[in-house]
Image (cartoon, rainbow, N blue to C red; front, side, top):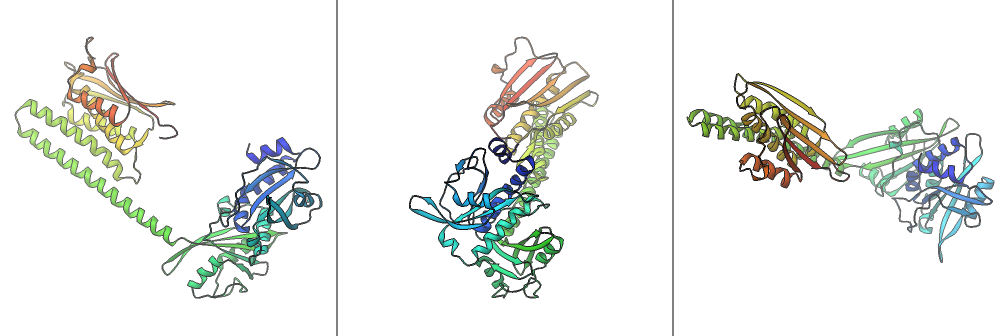
Length: 471
């Protein structure tokens, strides 16, 4: 249940259909407030004598209105809002003044809101400064904002999104004549060599407002993006329909040239970054190939083992860069990385006659690339350790990777069904370089903890706390 429905259910005698209508109006209220340069408030009768309840309220982005806290759900008496009450009772629109704060008056206009049967169910007020109220065309904007709230809406809500102070606004009447254009709209048309647009028809060749014509004929909002020279604009045309006829068209023009320019710059930067990751991956694989060549030339088994471990560490990092080169986000699915590393290490470390069964169960865990790189090294070291030490004297075995998502943590478990760890083995006292690397990366880079235990083989459990509200 949304806020408007909840307020209506608790404080008023409105039917579910009437509450749903006010909820639809509430979604439109920010655009109406921006269009009218006024605070817009919707009232309905509350249970009890001569009482009103505020069900929705919106402040404009297009004008400064003295701040007042959101009063949704507040019950006020008829004497506190006489203009609103008069409109609720008689259905007549009223224009007047009210005291906003001690010694400070503002201009106020009220309109009735009726349901499908014509019954008055609410009233909307538009409150603005005297300076705004005196502005040219203000009444046209308020009238258009009110009509906008009372139309049936079948289009997506995105067409009715809020305005900014830099948006151009044009209002077209039922005959297709432009009856209002704000300074921003006039400035945009001046760039195109048109000095005056008010009074022109939307079919005028110079004005060429095809989108407004389309919105009028289809009776649905339309939106398009177009370029004129080096300027990129978006245009929205919102028709206001009454009794099946278009009585107003609100045209909103936004100059998005700078936004498009920044988007293009971001795309270029993203492509450059992806190319860098691709080259890093290739360079790492080249280094790994050189180390393999070096390994084949040496006769020392100890040196061969050390070079093989280095190759696997390098390749595990290259896996991360390969993922980063294929996407434009700096976040990586650790499950995919772990699966690839399991394949890479198994292929590089196994003896030809060893039968290894790789088991992978991974839930999606998305982490920043820095943490994913550290985990790649950790997973590499633990898998490598299982292959090297877990199956001494055996010709087959299982190595598995489990990735689990818990409410407050991620768990990554690497295990095997090998010979296990000695009863007196203490991971904290181990002088193994691989284990030192693993513990350092888990605790310092990832912020997690490592537990190694025996359970029909060696198990290494990594637990990473989930950040609050984060990944």
